[in-house]
Length: 307
Image 1 (cartoon, rainbow, N blue to C red):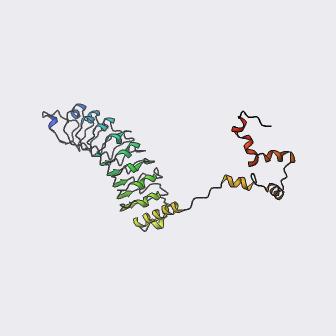
Image 2 (cartoon, rainbow, N blue to C red):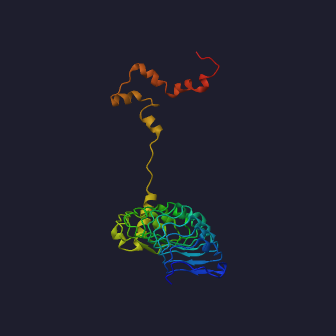
Image 3 (cartoon, helix red, strand yellow):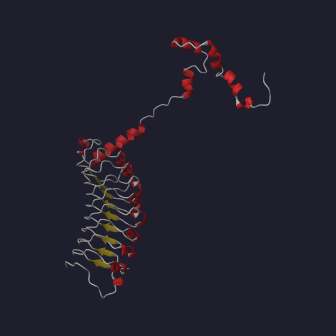
């Protein structure tokens, strides 16, 4: 309707369950209006000119779907964490540079988080606490890294972090612990090596890696498709775990080698061209088992006198 501002409605706003204000020219939503939408379940304000959301949005305790895509929003209010019934948040095509640091600690029912086509540099660490999350779409941003402990996203089925272009260079090992992951899109980034752990993802049906300078797996493997990529990574991981550990040298062996406790010290000295001066031989002999007991704390501090 090309609305620049909202009229003052005569009806009781507490009766509204779904409010669609999309495709207008709204630059703000009044705090007083949002605070009265106590029973709203769906709020759609996409394709407006909004630069921010009112703090009173935290009053929407029954809100399940929030669509603020296609606006000019630079940040989400921290109070959005109070919308604990929220199941879907669509903030695509905005100017977001950050998300609230603790967003993942409170939105425990969130199933879909769409923040593509923004200017996000990182996803907050709390994102990994969104245990109900099934879809995470963060493509077309400026992401430089993903949270390390992604394994907490036990229900995640779709992860899209494609087209972060020159920014995203690595993926965390924990990405291979997303046991319910079905679709993974990391295309058009600067990733050189995929984590070997991806080979463990039995439910993974689609993996997109084109547009990366991949070395592991090599291009010839990538060309063979998803199955070949998973098999390559799985074999690489298994071979790494099966390689025998390096045998550690024993310090006792070194003592024996250098004759500390051996009776053939003189032969070794002559063989290596090392001759110990006679005045030090007696001192060296004190280190033999025969004399060690003379220097034990029990003997030194005993009231008995030794001649």
